[in-house]
Image 1 (tube, one colour):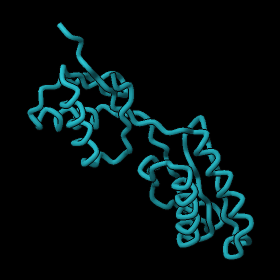
Image 2: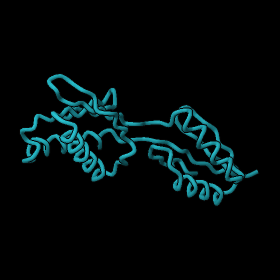
Image 3: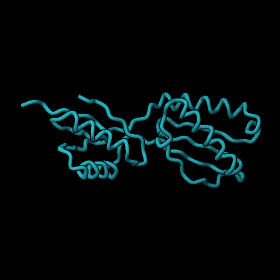
Image 4: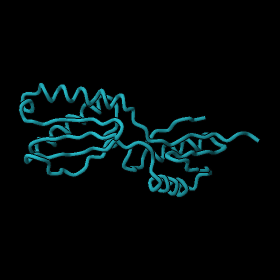
Length: 165
């Protein structure tokens, strides 16, 4: 019997590229004429996987977030990889917005992906392994159909398809 072909569905973010985008955004924040003296700051916490923007007003915070987003796009990082929270009041009348970098597929999303794949009625086997899914099938063409199907769906985070064999 031939061995099944398989691939993994994962959600990974290159933290080094996020750090590079953060460095570029921090440099632009200190040089841009409309934001230079505004008092806005950006902080990246790699262990906690968060980006914190502090600004004197919500409008300025949104400008800084857009600037960070443009740097992430230039570094080929999907904007869905960062979930921005609601603006919170901080000291001195300023506003703080925290963005969490999403890595790994949580159980609820994994179950939704599994259910959607099973709903296609394709002959595949899906197993949930910690923060990734393994999809296997005897037919490589069927796996290609599953990848095409998943690319058309939106699960609120970027998905990558790795270990295709």
